[in-house]
Image 1: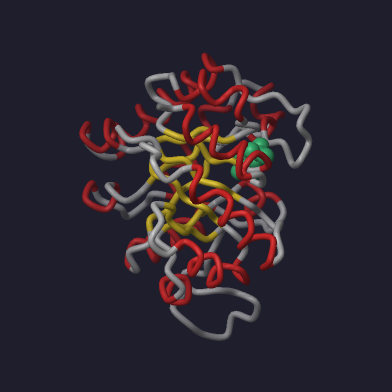
Image 2 (image 1 turned 90 degrees about the horizontal axis):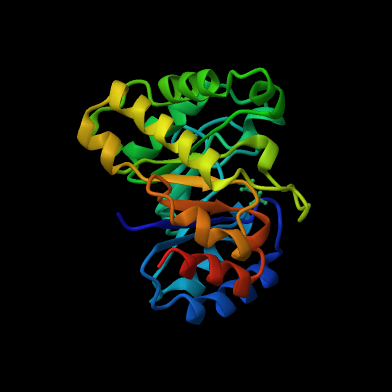
Length: 253
Ligand code: PEP
């Protein structure tokens, strides 16, 4: 299966900086075997889209509302994302869950709405440190998958990717945070696949891309991406520099 490497820039990069970053990135990944997606902030999507024209890099957003329009001050709709050229959208990121209190039911609505508008969701799931220590990581992941993929069928799942992001491994800009070991990540990815097998059919379980997210960088991407059930990465901090991100893209080849 083709890897998917997605850049989550979070709340970083002004318009000028964002355009400069993709300008530098485009030639570095032009021959990439993986699918490459960048997910900038809403305000810079249009200019980044213009800069990406004719390249192999796809555009994604970091969040969206589930309604097409309406009185939702400060929010952005799937129609708006489509109209500036987005093909992907990150949903259920732990920042959204923890800081903005998004729950599984809301995220499920967003996933369904994204698919309705032909936006490919990258659905994030993963346990925090306490949950890992208590030994309930798999329960958390299973519940999130069940609740956030409610109402979807096998056909719709063809456009969904899952990002397994252990929250304790997310750098939040700190380069000293350690990622999950490749063995631990692989085990969790196998578990995600087994849950998909229960919720959907074997084909869906086999063919859904499961990305790893949490301090992935040039130095560790190769060993993580070599694991059989790791089909790409959702990259935060290390996606903010073109060279490092391009090395991650190439690491899976
Ligand atoms: C993230 O927040 O999605 C993420 C994976 O961040 P980082 O790569 O910086 O750990």
